[in-house]
Image (cartoon, rainbow, N blue to C red; front, side, top):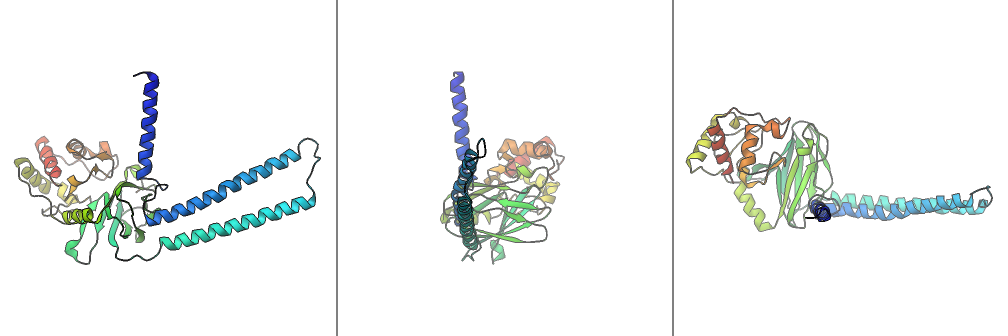
Length: 332
Ligand code: CUA
């Protein structure tokens, strides 16, 4: 490939990547009622403040032009008075419009919702625990670093943290909302478009703040119901030698002190619930893609991939590491 061709390839590749990013994590590509309300405020503010900025610059340019050189050509008191009055009335009027619009859209963001999906998200250094709540405790389940929501149905999300202040931001669905120690915040989202999106912690919370992503899926109602009923099931029962050995090693070592796997003795609540780990697409809150290779290197040395993470390297024989990896990869 010629150098020019290479540059073009890189440029178009970057643009395609930026466009792709834009779709999944941009407040300018809203797909929910709430984010669209925010976008309306942004649009109005842009269309008012942009022309106002230009007007002010034009007025300044005109004043400098009239006053160039000797100081002759000063505007009369009458012209100045009308100019000042005009700008004051215009500014006050536009500020009133902006305030009213902001108030109306803010009410819309906090309107009560009917028949919501109830979710509790707990931020931890540095990952998200996601619990689906239900009046029937047997229907509750816990996952991590991924949020599935049904399209055209509001979700009511309770936000908590077990350590420091974090901030949940899924730009395509709603604005930022802080997760504050000892306090529960609430945020609602009503997605209108099926797709895969991305959320991110938006408040600096320590060393791995940047690796605190949330995989967000908006599903059609049938796909959501199927996902939900699958998540409620216990982890798959191992059927091969490796996965059976892996389960035994997992429950007998320090792994089980921090992680839970439904249907086994592993009941730790410090780290992410792994009951359906292999159904997720990323590892360590988006720090790396999830496949057998990345999972094995992650377990062997978490600090190398995400320095500062609370997950320690559990001393394992190579065979144990391989079996545990096989077992976890069977938990789809
Ligand atoms: Cu959590 Cu930044």
